[in-house]
Length: 281
Ligand code: C2E
Ligand code: MG
Ligand code: MG
Ligand code: MG
Image 1 (cartoon, rainbow, N blue to C red):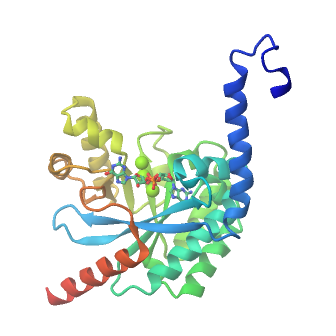
Image 2: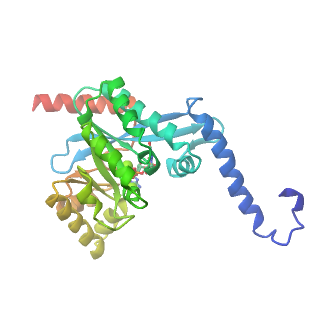
Image 3: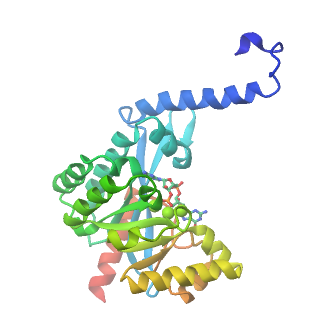
């Protein structure tokens, strides 16, 4: 470390390596305390019907504000939590909090919660979902769990069983970031997904008229339709992107164009307004 600074043969690349490793170590230690120190909170991003523009629900997205380092992106700390075996407790906190917060909102907006593969490889997770629903009073049909294709990459028999038992509770499943991971489609016939979420990379490509991106969205929409699933276009930022994914037949849309991830109070107001509009209609 610093004691051989200026001396060691490999000094030219070592300092950076140490910074990365050191940063990881510091963040991991901090993350261990984040839950008990109340440093996590949830934001809620609206998901809307592509045709009517009406709110269908929200995706819960976790946020971590470190007392000194400030906000740290989930893109950074979720993989860290997965490596450090902290995703179990953090994921459970996210699920229980999202159910508890959304249960109090007027109307029947759905609430989607991201679940890491590690959580689904733990059979005890089914009981956690059941208890999050029971404690909050959120009806199971209002909860949706988002899983990625990576769940099906390693030996997945355990995870598939867990997903089946979650479906038996009446909870829905959606397939997140579709097209960015594992390419075998066999699992689509084994596990009942309600929605396929098309990754933002394809949305960007389609709006730039990249033929391959357009072809892929078309194919995914056709596949989803024939399997009775909805399709959500992720990360729609502009009107052009919205028009494009709507023309391609995506049934739901999500992105900054419709709304950023919102603090819980603002999400509640939006849910209330949506419930009112629906009653008035
Ligand atoms: P994701 O599940 O695909 O979530 C969508 C991400 O895209 C979110 O980033 C969201 O803020 C961002 N996004 C939404 N609309 C737009 C847009 O129009 N343009 C762009 N450029 N981005 C948009 P976020 O909140 O930083 O989360 C990143 C990822 O972290 C999530 O991707 C998910 O994989 C993971 N994550 C977040 N919260 C949780 C959680 O509670 N549990 C687990 N396991 N993973 C989580
Ligand atoms: Mg997601
Ligand atoms: Mg996604
Ligand atoms: Mg994504």
